[in-house]
Length: 458
Image 1 (cartoon, rainbow, N blue to C red):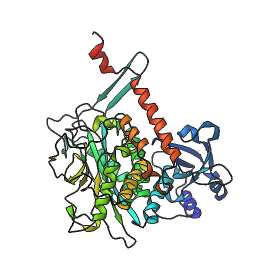
Image 2: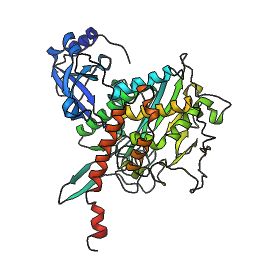
Image 3: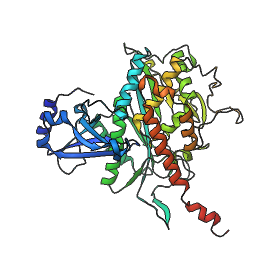
Image 4: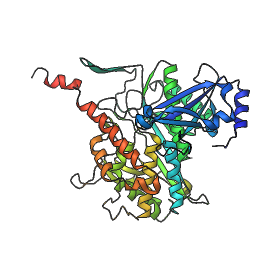
């Protein structure tokens, strides 16, 4: 990401005849918000002063102390193709509204930078690099309601496949044009793309795989990718969802995260041609940390009640807390096709994109960092590598949490690895537990449509 001055951004806006400035903020749970103002208010003094907003409405603070300020991040400025008037859009930094104007520690964009700094402060690595995989469904129609006297959903898809639709070709792959258009837009936003294709799900399940970026950039790009895809679907009258399991008995949607660490010289410290799957001992410690904390991680990487309908056997979703080459049922897969030592990496497969990407990726990094610092060797922790197909006996296997409630309980018990170097504030963890337990409560209090099928005439 290039470093830009106010003068450069102002000149870019003037050249594009910009009429409005749009500032974007991600709330606690991962929904994007924005505020717009006329271009003539885009001055150096107003940018330093920032824009005040109510942090409690974003889930951050209690109402009694909710005044906060957002400061534009000039390095993220781009022309927004989805606004009716020429608009310059930017991400922001959240700051306290008092005289100190300190960065807000619960801001996801602050947390990813703190997590990266923790690598350096602990003399482990200089930078982490990430490759995200975006899986989602496209529907022609999607209606849902949750009222007092009625509840249900209805989705429509033109696609039908007798067998799995992995890499299905047009004309059966009806939305290759959509992915083409999305990837072209992503390029304009400087979001790297490796490839795109139809996924396994028979009803228009898609995948776009990103490419290598450092953690802060990847998290911003992930947020923009969701923004692009939702807006593009709206433009074409389609319904798009990242729900982990929108369709019963079909493959679910994940947000797989490939990752590796490099030193100051840019060398990949995960690579060792003599190690298991060509991984270094440092990489194995990193794996050990993630596996050890995998249950607590799920509270951030799989933060919806729907997440755990995906994490079940039989649909290429991870269920077992182990690692191995080409094992898609394992929490961590080591891609066998990687030949370039500089791209040697591990893939953490449980996450889905109902997460806040800043929190989720930072939590995974902090778990890996804990593994390196404490030399958590997965071989000696009972996580023997299982290459596909997994031969772990069911009674001996360690499984990922079966529900959001289980994941939240794990986070409450196991969160010291997140608070190392002050990366995750304790107040954020408490707030997260509070919000997510309220979501569970809202679900379990309501009759489920299928309960009517089972019990109405009993």
